[in-house]
Image 1 (cartoon, rainbow, N blue to C red):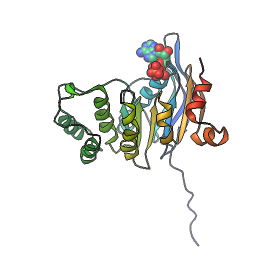
Image 2 (image 1 turned 90 degrees about the horizontal axis):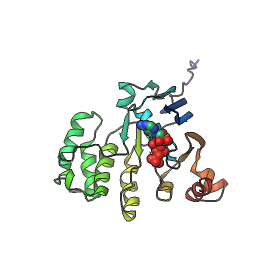
Image 3 (image 1 turned 90 degrees about the vertical axis):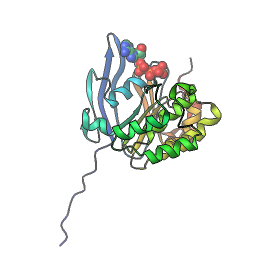
Image 4 (image 1 turned 120 degrees about the vertical axis):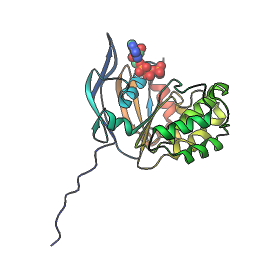
Length: 241
Ligand SMILES: Nc1ncnc2c1ncn2[C@@H]1O[C@H](COP(=O)(O)OP(=O)(O)OP(=O)(O)O)[C@@H](O)[C@H]1O
C-alpha cells in the first residue's frame, strides 16, 4: 500500500498582513494585506502619495512597518528575506564615478545570485556602452543600467519602483520585453508605475492603492474580460480628478 503523503503547499513568495505605516499623522499605508504567489508580474498602481513606494520599501526591508507583518518566502524581514529580494529604488543609488562595467563587477562581487553574463547581454541589447562612466550617461540610460543590474540577479522577488519613468516611449516596450521578461517563471515581480498603458500587456495582476488603502487586487483579465476595457482606461476612470 502506498503511503499517503499530504502535500504542503509552499508559502507564498510574499505575504503581507495588516501592514501599516504612519509618518506622524500621515497614514502612508493602512492595513495592507496580500499574498503573491510565484510566477506573477504585478503592477502596483495608484495616484501620487497613495503608498506605493512605502510598501515597496517595507518589503525590501529599508523602511519598517508601524504595525502588521510581512514575510518573503516565509521569512520575516531580515537578512534571509533581503537576500531573496532584488529591489530597484525610485531614486538612482549607484556611484556616478564608476563605469558601467565596474558596476557589473561590483554587483557580481556583492550578490551571490548575480548573473554577470546575463547583465552584459541585456546591456548589449539595450545599446548601453559599458566603458562609459555613469556620470556621462543620460537619465534614461542610467535607468536601463539600474534595471539591468536588478534584473540580472536570480532572485525570487523583484521590486521595481517606477522602472521606466525616464526612458523614452519608443524604448519602453523594448526594455520591458528585454529586461522584465528575463525573469524566471518561479520568480515574481512587483512594479510600481504611472505608465499603465505601457506596462499593462506585461502584467498578470494589479493592485490599486488610494490614500494608503488597497482598493483592488485582481488579475488584469478581470478588467479586460469582465469589464471589457483596458487597465489604463479603468485606472483613469477610477482616479478621475
Ligand atoms: N519619509 C517620509 N516622511 C513623511 N511622510 C512620508 C515619507 N515618505 C512618504 N511619506 C508620505 O506617505 C504617503 C505615501 O507616500 P509614497 O511615497 O509611498 O507614495 P507613492 O504612491 O509612492 O507616491 P508617488 O506616486 O508620488 O511616488 C504620502 O502622503 C507621503 O507624503
